[in-house]
Amino acid sequence: MKKKTNSLAITDAEFAGFGTYKYSAIDDSPLSIYVMHPFWDWCVQFMPKIWAPNTITLLGFCHSILQVVLLTIYDPNFQESKKRHDPQMGLVCLRFRTIHGAHSRRNRW
Image 1 (cartoon, rainbow, N blue to C red):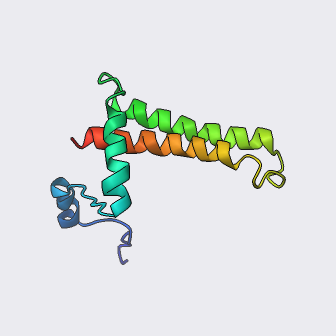
Image 2: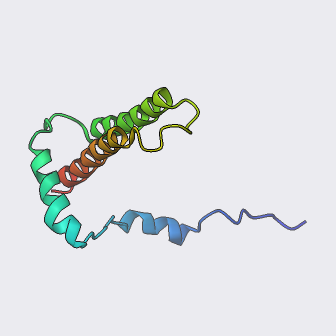
Image 3: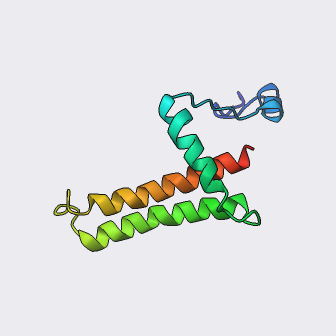
C-alpha cells in the first residue's frame, strides 16, 4: 500500500529557513517618507513605554470594531448613510491607522 503524504506539509529544509527569516518591508513612497513617518514618530512620543506591543495592537483593533459598531448604529441596513457619516468613519479609520503606524515605528526603532 502506498503511503499518502500531505501536500501542504513543509520539508525539514524549508522549516529550517524560518529561523533565518527577518521581516523587512521598505516603504519608500514620498507620502510615507515626508508626511506619515514624521507624523508617526511624533505620535510615538505620547505612547507610554510600559505599554506592550500587543496592547497597542489591541487598541487599534478596538478602533476597527468601534468603526463597525458606529456604522451599524448610524445605518443598520448599510444602505442609507453613504456620505452622511463618512467624516466620522474617516476619523476612526485615521485613528486606527495612526495607532498602527506609530506602533510599527516604535517597535522598529
